[in-house]
Image (cartoon, rainbow, N blue to C red; front, side, top):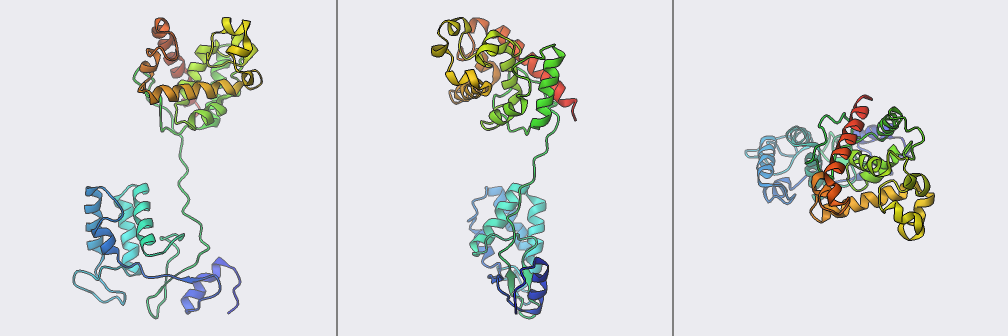
Amino acid sequence: MQYFGSFLLLPVFIYMGYIGKGIMKVKRVDNIRDVISKNKIGLSENYAKTLNSIFSEVDKYDSQGNEVNGGDGNLNLKEWKSFCAKVRSEFEDKVANKIITEVLQYNDIKDINPFEDIYEMPADKTYYAHPFVMEIEPEEPVAEPIDKEFTKNSPIKTNNFVDKEKFGKALNNLLKSKGKTDSKLIDLGSDIVDIAGGMSTDPFLVAAISIQESGWGCSPAAKECNNLMGINDYAKAKKKKKHFVPRDYEDNPLASIKTGVNTLDTRVSEGYETFTQVAYSGRYCAKDESAGWENNVLNIANQLRKEYNKLF
């Protein structure tokens, strides 16, 4: 039979029992009992017990649909679909996908969508899958308002997903509300999210530190040297700019942001994980300025948070 390359025709070919070009035969979802009972997937003890219970519940028939006492250790198509549904309802998505993917890989079944692309031949219950399916796309993260206020104990690192477009608008709105329309930080919000997010660093704290260190992006260090994170003392830098402010700062306002984020990352690796620990470490601002610096940055971070939340 000629292969027409149409996804829509594949189920028809399979139902008729033909194996057209581009369709490959794969094994049944066998040996699952062995994979699960010996916990070859590497789950925690509680997860492994739950998975064993699910498998025992669904494994009731052989490949021909005949009921077997205690099951046959394998899953026919109906059992497999039930198994997948129960796994997905019992476990969080990340764990469920790991379980199902690992089970398939132990059977040399790869690069298929186990929820859509396994077909059953009516005659002999053989499974077929075509190799043209896409990998399961991870769900797009959804940004939400930041309800929790920033405090002294707020971590430098975060897993919160921040909408960079909204963050950019929020930062611009905050700067404009303070009359800082000529700030060097205008329109840098989305870049700050990208840079901070690459290091899992909280962009609100990064932006707040930048505002504090650069006088809302309007200090001489910010305006003349693109130093937006207080990396060096401007009085010294003014005399020997090339020695105290890296040259790439002069043409790239994001260079100092990257340096600041890297500095925060280093502080975290040294054990200064919360904002107050960084503030009083003497490793970012002078210790005798820590209290005022800490309060100012937290106040700014919460102002920015409120502007961000208004956009939802």
